[in-house]
Amino acid sequence: MCEPAQPTRRRFHITSIYGLWTIISGALGLPAVIYLLLPPRTRHRDEWVEVTDISSLSLNQPEEITFRRTRKDGWKMISEKAAAWVARISEQEVVAYAPQCTHLGCAYHWDEKQKNFLCPCHTSTFGIDGKVLDGPAPRPLDRYQSKLEGTKLLLGPVVQSDEEG
Image (cartoon, rainbow, N blue to C red; front, side, top):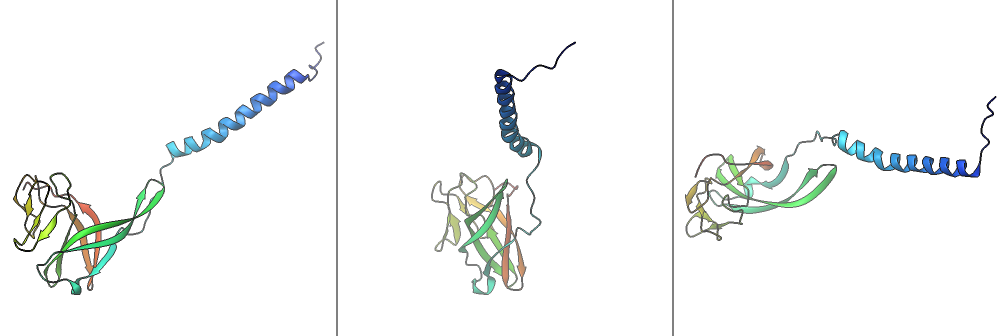
């Protein structure tokens, strides 16, 4: 009859090594599997950020506003500084433009003498309505989604302009 094998030092070490390999593989593999198979949790909070009180804005005089917003990048929350050019068109109508030119992403500014936005990189110009007046820019300025709550201006994500300039 077969007797059970007696534990030997060699068998003990081999079993220990395989056991450690199993533990290490599980410790490294489980987070990788979770990362690959489970999506990050989505926030159910609004993405709107309060940026200014529109009563402080002059009519047809764009102003560059800086604000802080929180952006979610996968599992990481990033607080970042952002900017927008905000123009009050009427008493209850406000538009907010992303601060990059639609040609190559340069920062533009408001030219008070010409009453338009001017990109210094390639001299694209845009009207206060965001439309291309001159230069190589392929489309109007991109806008932030915006809404008013009383006199407070709230900005959402940037919406790319689709119409040709």
